[in-house]
Length: 218
Length: 195
Image 1 (spheres, each protein chain N blue to C red):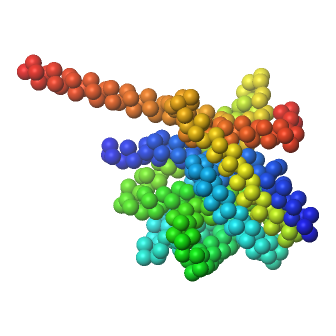
Image 2: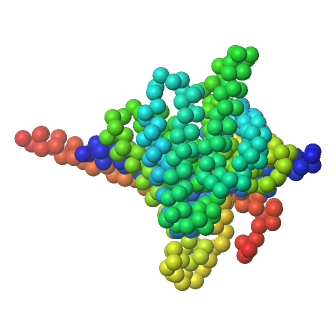
Image 3: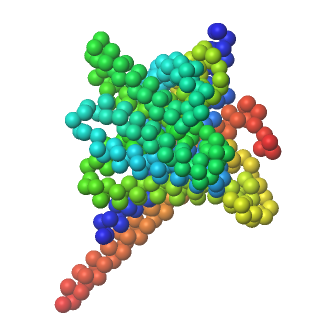
């Protein structure tokens, strides 16, 4: 159980695909400009990555990697079809159109093309699912957070809820605004992660000293 | 003909640079910007694949573009095009340039299967241009990547130095740096915050 929790948090924080490794930064920085779009983008990523990795697992290892990577990309491309139809049905075609090319380019994200090979395929199925879930939720959380933040800063609202913020920064709707926000969040995420790691190490050290002291006394 | 090619290429290099304008291919650029040879290698690979793929994409768009569900299946078709060109090119390199093959075999797929290549094909396709426009956009995307890569490469050492707080060193500061360069490019082409 503890191991599963660690594996889940791996993709969620330690190896977050947006803030830590930066391999899926483009859709978040350029396209997650409001709450609704970020939700749709998250849904697209979830379907494409989940179906893509799941099916890619069954690609025989006998095939050389040069060919396998093409098959992975094609499978991810096929996973785009249900993702697109689902987003059309849930959010409407206007939202899908507003995502532009950032929805189809999710099909060539390194989570499917590289991590399937170097990580997911090396694990037993249930561990693979836990890890994959961590990575997907990691992307979705960051995507929705950035989208919500930009919605507040640019439009003074979250989705349909007006916050009457009183100040607006339209520049954060642009790509450069998204890049600056994402870069700053990446730095803060690392600071938070390093701090929690340091605290854990200090706690373990204190515990060790306490045990040593008790042993000495006894 | 030539004018269409040149104007599409210039558009892809400056006004619609895949890195600065659309943030496409940033993950590859962050990886490539460590060495000058990597920047050049990746840019050449990207330029080659986007230019050649754009011819096939132009043909596909012409043949099936009016189909009702073309937008839904086009990513698979584009990936198939990229895959066919990638594998045939690799076979040709393996057959005739053994030394080059040994150098590129580990990294070739990174330069080919990324969102900068697929994104460039989509943008070229949506521009509704003729074949020279498609070719120019594909070629210009590679040049734009080279320009962006060089700008990141020259700043790489400084951005990873002790001058930068440790939590921002590496990817975060490089993304912010790309954002600031993107802001400068927006100002250059006439962005207005009130617009």
